[in-house]
Image (cartoon, rainbow, N blue to C red):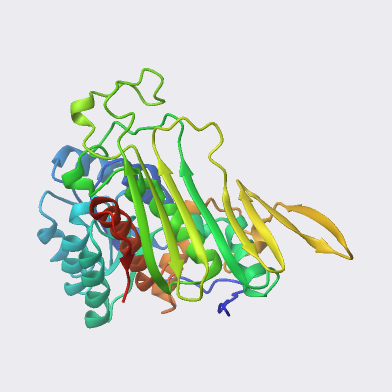
Amino acid sequence: MSIAIVVESKSQEMREVKVGIIGCGGIANGKHMPSLKKLSNVKMVAFCDIIEERAQKAKEEYGTPDAKVFTDYRDLLKMEEIEVVHVLTPNVSHAELSIAALEAGKHVMCEKPMAATYKDAKAMVDAAKRTGKKLTIGYQTRSTQAYQYARKLIADGELGDIYYVKAPAIRRRGAPLWGVFLDKEKQGGGPMIDIGTHSIDAALYLIGNYEVESVTGSVYRKLADTAMYSNEWGIWDPKDFQVEDSAMGYIKFKNGATMVVEASWVINMVDGGCTTICGTGGGIEMRGDTVRINGEKNGSLFINEVKPNSTARELFKGENLTPEEYEAKQWIYSIVNDTEPLTKPEEACVVSHIIEAIYESAATGKTIYFD
């Protein structure tokens, strides 16, 4: 298996890019707007939220002095000067807003997951192709130094033939009680679509394999009906906890490789493990900002731990950027220089397909086979 790696030694001069923000809640304030504000060539000129006060606050903190505030996204999309739109709303609205923005002639960054359903994710891919506009999804794990370093090792064949992957996203007591995380209608699911989506995407990014044959899933609601006083973010009311507390998936690829996915907000597991890649020539464990490589040499086993520095990334080598800052900078770079964004919509669509198949398999008791 080969993975194309494009390396840029330095970024080109960046022209001004005007951005509109749709959704001014937690992920906008915690990730996107602070990262965009650090880019000197980016101007946030419009903010939209169904709660006008949130949009106004975002304008005051991140916008240009003459930035516009809206409660209807259609009004924002009418602004011809906007080149890029960030869609930062609940999962169920991602497709509608992203497709509308693409059809309005805007490039779109949509926060993860791509959509609440595979059908919607596929429609987003089709809209990007139809309009010729760029579409990317906010999977910032790809932007870490460790994951880009590990991906290149795998691309260079250091691990040989990859045949087993483990992709956990485990919180012992970490159910998010803010926003709409517990609302099945607006989210489309619980921990699997919330944090499992990151672990699936990150693992697929490492191995470069998107050829899925089948998915088998299990969904659990074992602890959600008990108010957990030990929960990191407070006590929930069980009647408000509308989604699963844990979900697991077994993915088989067309080349025979397999991947196990674990996602939970609340589970009696002390150590959830780490993303693990096993090949015929060695293995990798992703432990925070450290890549632990294991193998055999001259008849002896070895373990090497590497903490990649800022030169490990494909772009902006030597720049001390957080994953969120790198994600934003490479996204704007791709627009200015007409290159592919780090997260391609076709890849993110496979992630949504896997998640939906896990839920469907759990509901039907059957293995779901991909075309």
